[in-house]
Length: 248
Image: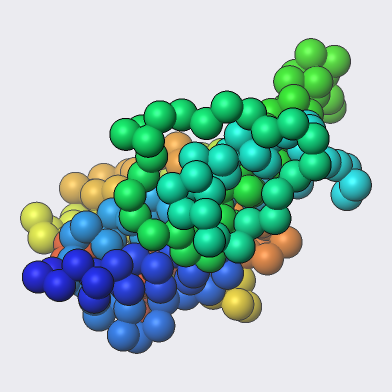
C-alpha cells in the first residue's frame, strides 16, 4: 500500500485478531486477499501464536519466567520508546544494545503481548526438556472416519490424530475419491469446532489416493472435527464454502 500508516493499521488489526484467536473481520479478510505482505504477517503470527499456546499448556498455572527475563525481552523496545506502557521489573537492569540495533517502529499492544508471551515460552521449553528426559506415556491416537460431501460423494478415508509431547498434533491423512485439483486451486485440511476452524495445511490431488502428514497446535477440545475444502489459489486465507469431506 502507498500509505505506510494505513498499511500498519492492517498489520496491527491482523495481529490483534491472531492473538485474540478470532477470525478476521470481513474488512480485514478483503484486505488480506489483496495484500501478500499482510497475508504473510497473518500466517507467520498465527504460527508463532500456536507454538506459544502449545508451550504454555505444559506449564504449571503458577509458573513464572526467570528473574530479569522480561527486561531482556522488552528492554530494547523500551529504550527506543521510553513512553511505552511496560512496567519495569525489580532488580538491576541489564545492559541495552546500541541504538543502531533497535527497531525504529512505534510500539503497539500486540507486540508487547507477543514478546511477553515469548518469555513464558522459554519456561515452557524447560518443561518440554524435562518431559523428554524422564519420558511420558505415549498418548493414544484418535482416528476420525472421513466421508465425502455432495461435491465429492465418492470421497472416503480417515485422519489419525497423534498428540505429541510438545502439545502439538500430528495428523496422518489418508483419503481417496477426491476429484483432481486444478492448477489454480488446492485442498485445505481444517480442524473444525463450533467457534470456527483452524487450518492444518494444504495439498493438491491428481485424483488418486492422498496420503499426507500435517502438523497443528490447535486445541482438540475446541476443534474436535476434521474438514476438507477445495480452495481457489487467490491468496485469501478464509475458508471457501466448497466442503468436500469431513468427519461429521
